[in-house]
Every structure is written in C-alpha cells, then in structure tokens.
Amino acid sequence: MTDRDVHLPVAAQPTIDSIVDYTQAAEDAGYDCAWLPETWGRDAVTVLSAMAERTDSIDIGSSILNTYSRSPALLGQTAATLQELSEGRFRLGLGPSGPVVVENWHGVEYGNPLKRTRETVEIVRQVLSGESVDYDGDDFELSGFRLRCDPPETPPPIEVTGMGPKAVELAGRFADGWHGIMLTPDGARDRLEDIERGAELGGRDPEAVQVTTGVTCCVLDDTDRARELARQHVAFYVGGMGTFYRDSLERQGYDEAIEIHDAWQAGDRDRALELLGDDLLDDLCAVGEPESARETLERYEAVDGIDAIAVSFPRGATEAEIRQTMDAVAPDT
Image (cartoon, rainbow, N blue to C red):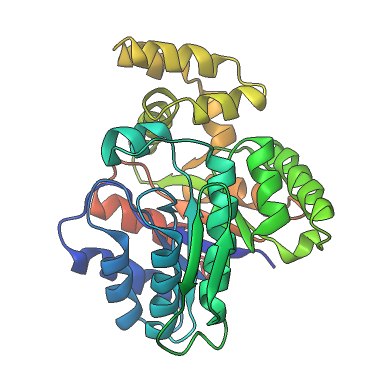
C-alpha cells in the first residue's frame, strides 16, 4: 500500500506553533510522514525539534536540508539528535538545491552537486555509525570526528532529491530513498528506471530505495480559485527557480515549459500563466473537487515503484485552504 505523506507549506507561516499544528493535524488524519522544507524562513532543524516533541506517531523529515549550507559532519550530528528526540521517527532528506539558492543566498560556489551529495551521504552514514570518521573524497577530507553520544540504535534513513537522470541514478546507487517533484505519473515511471539502473550499479535491490513523489494539491469549494493557486505555484517554480523544473518538464514532453520559463524571466508573469495550460496543470496537480483530486492521486499510486505520495500545497494558499485540502485528500478520508 502506498503511503500518504504531507509536505508542509513552503510559504512563511505566522508562528512555529502554526507549523506544529499542521503536523498534529496530519498525524490525526493518518498521514505517514510530515516533511518540512527549509527555504528562506525559519531554519528547519529548530522547527523539526518542536514537531518531534509535540507528536507521537507520525514520522518527521527534512525535505530538504541542502548539502552546501551545513557540513556533512553537522548533518550527521543533526540526524542523530533528531532521531533521539523523535524516538526513532526522523528521516533525513538531503539535496544540493540549486545555484539560485546556494550561490545567491548562501554565497557558496555550487560546484559538482552530484559528487557533493554522494560524499555527504557517505559521511553522514559514517557519523551515524558512531565510529571515527575518516574520509578522503574530492569535496571533503575528514579525520578523527566521532559522536560523543550514543549513535542511534536505528539510524534514520538518508533520502535525497534529484531531478535529472544522473541525479536519480545516484539515489538508486547510494541513498535510502529518493524524492521526486514536478513529475507526472508517466514522468515518475521514467525516473524509476533511473533508480533501477543506479541500484544495479550499486549492487542493491531497487525496492530498498523508498520512492516519494510530491504532488501539488488544492481542493476548495471554489474550484477556479484552486486551479488559479496551483497554476501560479507551478509557473513560479518553472519560471523563477532556476532551470531544473523547466528541464524536468521538457524531458517529460512539455516543450511549453521553455516558453513559460522565458516569459517569467522576462517579467511577463501573465503570459507565463497563460502558457501553462489546463492539460499540463491536470497532469501535474491534484486540484478542484475532492473526487477528482483523489483520482489524480490514485493515478500516482498506481505507478509500480512509488512508495509514498507527498501532498503539498500551492505557495499562495491560506491556512484555511491548506487545511481544507489536507482534510480532503487525507489517507483516512
């Protein structure tokens, strides 16, 4: 059975309590994991700590902590600490993000994201083992670091993001899980082939890699408003967050992604939204009435190899709209 996760809102929330409230509501509704992004608001680790202390059964995870703004040793310490605090419910989501975030926000050279992700995963695993960390890589050289506390009895899984074929192949080769976003069901099937190829290269069983696909959802009484919010959300990511989302959609056969990106970059937001047609919106998002949204999620769940669907929400959705959507597509509904 496919898990139903929730990806907590990306847009800034008024308080930490409000984020914890969403997590508690997700736990009550039967969601399996609450994933917290780290963007330009509060740091994720502090908020994840509050989530861990105020919930009992739902898994909590970072999606994502980027591999440039924290060292691998610190990420290992963080994972060990949150696994202890949550009593074994933590999942570490890592990824390289992109140059828009890494270089513009953090002032760090982007470099080779695949190599950095692989080395980070390997070092975090060494830290979580409790043994002395000695590592000689291309991006990192470490010696002598060791946890001065008991390592987790059960290490948290290390799950990575990635959009291109090589990045997804890396997940299949080295990581415990992979998170995909901005994928149609058919697009997800293509990326699962990359997971299988990577697992084969790593001598692993592909089924050992937990595959989570994020789907933007918006279920409202006002279906036009729901579609407007989802359209603005997708256009922002395709047009305003580098080229990764544009390229991902182009690989899936949506050539209009290039025009959407170019219009957004030129400052013509109305044109970008106009270019994002209903067919693309409905292929990518679960929007509108509850029944149609649940049917969309079922199309993802029908893809052999997807282990979890992470329900996410448009950037512009209000608290009431987020809660209505969360309730409408909850696993217990």
